[in-house]
Length: 409
Image (cartoon, rainbow, N blue to C red; front, side):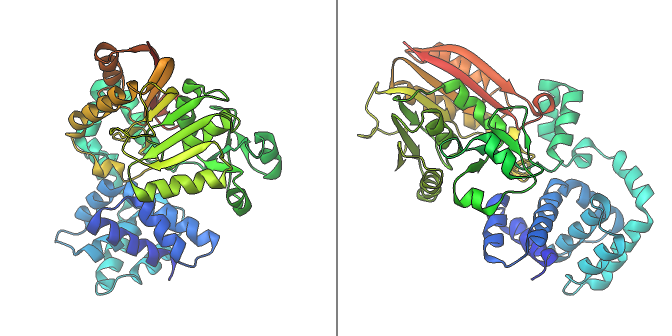
């Protein structure tokens, strides 16, 4: 198994069933023996092709005027991505990619060599194509962002989404300080967005095994800071898996007090529990539980602080979750807010008087963010909207997010 043959398999598996790209990639990497360099190449090529799907298919249409089977299209996407978006020598990209073609090696060789010869006119044609093709984003999403944020911000956001995400970790202060991690790894740097966040060139295996850090974009820490749990508090993390925010809350509480961390699916709770154990979180009860339903573990008006990291469209994290753009529909903006508001209504009944509830998403969409927060402030008894915060990639240089802080009456 070579790096490129694994990418080819991943592209075919993704195209046929459209699973989450992250889950698919990590499942295959966990079961395929590759060295560190090849694992990095697999990640770069797989995510890169998914980021550039519309552009790559546009180039294929310019170079080949007949239908292609899925296998040949996947091979051509991979080859064209290497030619137009990597520093891999063209001869190597062509040779290694042609070797993947089962029955169409001659066709693939001809198309890729023609693409290299005609690079200039192909790029000119691409520059004249619709923005949804140039930037490989759904047309409806670009139009929506342009209406909401303006043309310049939309361009900056699309460029951000199409760039590889750097590796960021949060120091787990239950076990170590950020400065100790910085000193232990040459090339690591403090992240300007949050004092516990680091840019790292790679993650030493023992850091993960010992629970010294958690791989996490710094934007996700804003909701935890807004919740501001104190040692001794009773806290509900209503949508907790995989545990990045849960374990941050435990560290902020110095492992004192109690966190009830819930999620709906057994597999997600298993991952949540494993992360809590690895990071040394001792004050957390992990439950496979639908927060929307009554349960003995969720008595009314019993929590000092509640975090609702709500299911959302994920439009703020498209750079990091590269295939989100291809799963979104125009109906999401109508479907999701009702679910999000229902979560706030339910959790408001669990909040102590004077307690703090934080609603957060990793979405950029007003319908899921300030509109939901404003509607909750108007219609949910016993909640007062105190403050909100938007985190926008083109301004803050981290993943996008939103959080709203409510105070219980």
